Every structure is written in C-alpha cells, then in structure tokens.
Length: 311
Image (cartoon, rainbow, N blue to C red; front, side):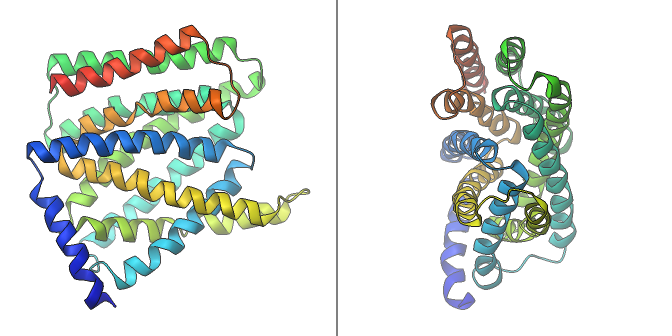
C-alpha cells in the first residue's frame, strides 16, 4: 500500500515545497493561517464545551492518533533518523501544553482564558522566529503586533472585569493561561523547525499526530472510570472524532503555513482566532458580547492586517 500511495503524497509535497519563498507560497500561507485561526477557535470551544476538558482532550487525541496511524505506517515515507529526537521533543512539549490548557479551561471561563493563551503566543513566537530562523519584523509589522496584543489582552481584561461566574478560580485560570501561552510559542517555533527538517512535510504531520495521540487517552480513561457520574462514552467519542478532524485541519494548516512562509507572520495571523473564539462564545456558548468587545475584536483584526500589509 505504501508503494501505491506514497507517490501521490510525494507529488503534493513536491508542489508545496516548490512554493516556498514565492509570492504564491506567501498567499497560500496566509490562507492556511486564517483557516487555522478559525478552526483553532472551534477546537478550543469544543474542548471547553459540555464534557470535562480532560476527557474531551483524551477522546480527541485518541481519534486523531488512530486516524493518523495508517498514514504514518503505510502512506507517507518513514521519518529520517534525525527526525526521531525531533518528534520526541514535540511530544513532550505538546503534552505540557495540553496539561496547562486543560487546567486553564477547568478553572476559568472560555472567553477569558482563550484570549490570554493566544495573546502570549505571537509575541514570543516572533522573538523565537528571529532567534531560530533569522526572521525580522519591520516597524510597521511591530506596530501591527502591538495592535493585535492590545486587542487580545484588552478582550481578556474586559472579560475579567465583567465576569460573574467562576471568579473564585479566575486567578489560577489566568496563571495557567499565561503558561499555556508560553507553550504555544514554544511549540509553534519548535514544530516549524520540525516540519522544515524533513524532506516530506506530510511525514512530520502524520507521525506527529500518531505519536501525540498516545499520551492523553490512558489518563482520560482513568479519569472517566473514577468519576462518580460518568458521561456516556458514545457522545464523548463523537466529539473526539470531530475534534480529531478539526485538529488535523487546524494544526496541519498552520504547520504548512510556517513551512511555506515566515513563522512569525503565520503565528500572528493565526491569533485572529481570538475574534472567532469571541463569536463562538457568544453564538454557541451563550456568553455575552457587547460593543466594547466588538471594538477590541476589530483591533485584533486590524493588527493582523497591519502585520500582513506591512510585510
């Protein structure tokens, strides 16, 4: 099966690699980053929804790990020897990220926690992209980053001031959110390095999802088994399956964007996910949205546009 399927992935991989550093590659990276932004907001809301965040995360990871396995073993080329330590490092970083994210979602409201998590990411990712890849933002782009961060943290502050539920655990939630945001910056930069280190980017994606899906499911199962009121496994696994598909599309899009174009610009564009998250919180989770929050969301979008146009 590998012999029959690999040529198709190699052709697609060759086409994507041919776009690296070109204007067409830049435009495709922009589209992929925006797609990742929307899907990441949906993914965050899915984890914060009706089920315990730990259980949802376990179901999602099991689903995408199982879906990635046949691609990893039978479709894409096996990782080169130097890729195994890189994949191991990605596994450790993402486990830390997911633990902190689940703690943050357990302690605080989605519309407070999510903007803080996402706000920490782009600033440190831009710095990491400079240190590792030599990427440099001009003054206009830095102004765009500041606009975006002002909107994101302003949104978090507004939600914090007017939140009525779960205020007793909000301090812990914000601390976990800040730590989670730092993990976002680390994994964005590290994974961009990883997907550039292999000849076929689909090799990194398939093996990453397979390996990353191994850690949380056993823990989630033990947690589910010890709960006094266990949720029905059927709806939980359906949510996990949907989340797995979204994770493939979201993470795959942003990783391809970082391979095709600048890591820092892709990271900033992805943080427009905060706008999508606020809309989801309002429309789906029934969390209030007023004119001030709409203005802050507009500021986030404006910052991303300035970064893009300034480049």
